[in-house]
Amino acid sequence: MRYYSAKNPKRCPGRTNYPAPTRPIIIRTPPVLTYPALKCILEFIDVAKRLNITARTKSLKIIDKSVPLRLPTLQLCSDRIIIHNLGIRSVLQYRVDIFYKDQYVKGGMVNFGKIEAMRRLFKYYLGDRSNIYVDSIVFEEKVRNLLPPELNFTINKLETHYCSFGEFLPMINPNSFPLRKLSMVYPEILSNLTLDHPIVHSAGHLYLNVGTRGDQSPMSDIQKLCNKSAFIKSISMKSDDCVKIIRYWRENGKEVGTKFIFTFYLPNCIVPMIKALQEPFEEFQDKLEGLNERRFIAGLPRFAIPINNHSTVILAYTIFAMVDRKREAQIVLNVVSTTA
Image (cartoon, rainbow, N blue to C red; front, side):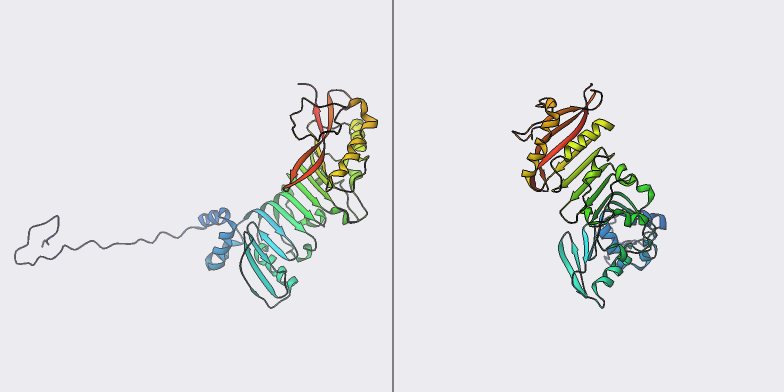
């Protein structure tokens, strides 16, 4: 039996003009993703989306802890945890607030105090995970005792505030070393502070922020550092500290390409330090006209001081540079080769 349709305009004898039936639309359910596929998606999806999805999916919760967690940045403090753009804070007692890109999302009351709240947050987000890969991780004081003991971080950059990096070495994968960057902020408050450590010497770049707290200053150890790149911010340096560093490098040698930058909170501190080089190294004063640098501080001396053989020299000069959107005065010690 045939029916009337656009393709069949003829009427069938004895039948009314019914429209031709259409084929039913069949929606095929896609096959369930296998574990390897889910693992790949979870591991490389944006971390905020991953945490959001797994919190709402029972099946994903089962495998989430076994899938490595990859984070661009992670900041661990005694009152907050910042996982890339997602921040969870317990600043007030019995309350937890959630932020995304520094914008408040939601918050609520909890049945336990701030310390217990943070301990549970660290356990929920980081505990029982096989591997956590972090490009840059920050530890702050008083956070060590709140972290789960089984953590295993593989990192590229390590930053500590008011605490020693040694506290966290048991939870850092040895494959992370040497570090690309090691940052220590106000480490001089520690009674056992020392820069004579393989992790310090092997770091690709060393950042040291030495404030005014505490009586111990690590400046005497800086001249012995093996790093090729270092950035030291301090107001505790003495006027002859650069003289001591240069003399040590001249006596013991220094690798070509080494560059140490000393920056100061107060620009006036830089004047006596660079002028202290004039008396012992007056014969090596040089305008450094061949150096591609446009930020020289006018009126202050510059030097090209040879190291042992005259094939390498230490360039010592001052510049103005922008640091954290602030204009700061810096002393640069740069070891270069004089041969082409």
